[in-house]
Image 1 (cartoon, one colour):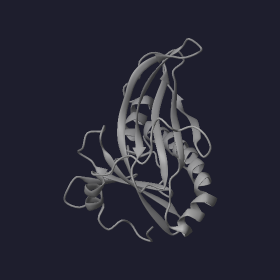
Image 2: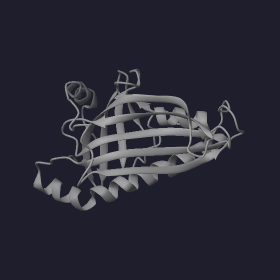
Image 3: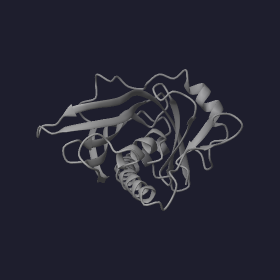
Image 4: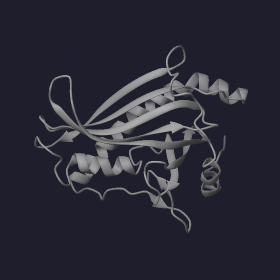
Length: 226
């Protein structure tokens, strides 16, 4: 727990390289585990493959860069030049004046066309991360941009499985017990609304596509940018 931004994100990311995930992926059922799926409409395109420069392509770039996160709730530090899969991210959760550093690692990139239950097809691109040691939570989050190739509808889909981790500090543990789940679901909703707004504004020419901001002389970046 801190009251200011992390003073050495590069050093923390270096330390995180030795961390393992903090849960057993085979045991994510039962009491205390939450399974979530949140969808947000981003726009409409012509049916068929994604349109160059359209909502799907714009959203994929911003999801890659973690620009969808609401900066009042969460920011992330990571190596901007690192490959997506295997990328370690120092998340900085924010609650009132407090900041909580938490480590995650990108484990999968999704890029596929699949058939839906209604027999339409959809293209999906995205990635997921798993929580690392010392994180306040345990679990995995998957962020996907999905286009229905038959209707042209483009959505942002967040799929998560999570549980509270063991928190040694009794004050933080009590606070997380009261506000953790509320903050988590608030993050999901805010992320979808923010991405939809950014896609609309960039598409309308009201702003440039946001990109992570480099900090310091190396390749460490912080996202989102505003």
